[in-house]
Length: 229
Image (cartoon, rainbow, N blue to C red):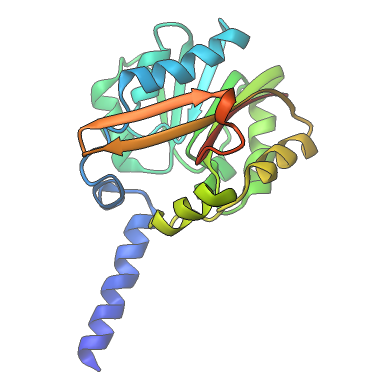
């Protein structure tokens, strides 16, 4: 009984650490390969699409993690970042220009006191437990005609079922279809400006493939959406 109690206590503590997205989360989910899974060309592909719609103004990256996208985007637009992980923000502060403001906190409780032209949520919203509240807060922080850029994994179709089977991230609260995300945004007053599929795969733990294209939006394991306020 004592061994069982210790094991359950360990599991509970491990989940708590994972749920807070601290160092243990990154070590377990990314297996020490977070940087390799976010190569420059991937970040540039996401940024290029944003710049089609907004070439100036202010950008907020929610779920900015280690700040890799912020570093790329800051060459083109003023940036801020927010993440629930104090570990990730600490890493980002050491590697980003001081002019980029960084905040520790959840999107549901975010209150920055200013609005943004662009808000990004790259692989973030699937982790947010209270999605309606999060989207309400995001809308309050977007300027009129501001855009929301997001990526999420999707779990419909044959590939989606394989993704669901392989996905061991227990912080994914929302394992939804692509139509769920599209309808959710439209139902909350957003206009879909761009909708593309993402095929991504970490090959041989050395090469990260990240193909973003409209051609695969109906079958891809993840999607990229830009929606206007």
